[in-house]
Amino acid sequence: MEVRALCIRLLIIVLILQCAHDQKVDAVSLRIVPNKSQFFEQESASFYCGEISHGHVLYKMGEEVKQCNKTSKKTTGSECTINPLHARDSGEYWCGTAGGKRSNNIGITVTAGSVILEIAAVPVMEGEDVTLRCRNKMISSNIAADFYKYGHHIGSSSTGNMTIHRVYKANEGLYKCKISGGGESPESWLSVSLPCVTETQRDHPACHIYLISWTVFTVVMVALLLLLVGLLHFGKATTANNSPRCKCNSNYDK
Image (tube, rainbow, N blue to C red):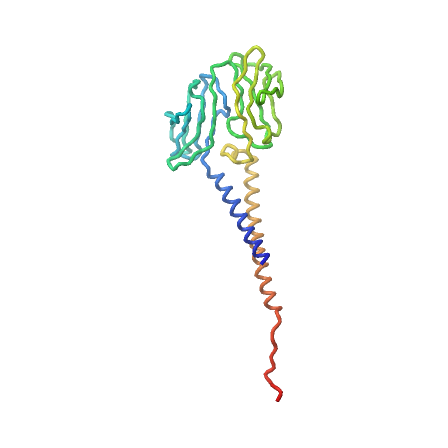
């Protein structure tokens, strides 16, 4: 009975993990090019609904939800390119389908100001290095900048770049930068996720190793399950063969 219960629990675990993995792979996803959440006016941005040709790029401006009127359908999915960007294009963007599926949100800020912080718009994988870049609209060369998280100073750079090595969940938060005498950027959220969750992440070489490892893990779990089932049947057969048998004498003493 203990082996049978273990088999059932193992089967349930495999099915739950497989379903969770499949949901991640099949989820509707949205990505942005270039991958940043802050833009100067007159720059451009393209949104892609990966592998969903019947999806639409939607965005929320204030309390009103609109459909990107520049969405074009392609064999690899739907995309929306906004060029040039204006401050009114700031907001939350996502991919929606007729069936009611909704992708991850991507928030962008378009500013008429002179400073932006270039920070990833989509979640970055735990363990990766992330570089924050402070840019001045009028100066293309590197410039000294200070970086802040939740308003607290976290570092300075003479080049305008700051790298966070091997990010993890604790690095999530609102970031901004300041340039002495040049102003400061808006705040943007840095999101950190488990590896290989989004479509963009799944294109990463590290995710290929993860997917191979997941496949091997699934095969091993199934093999282990079959082994336990075999042991269960073998144990039953052994018990049946070794059980005591009644030896009856057909000759009665008179």
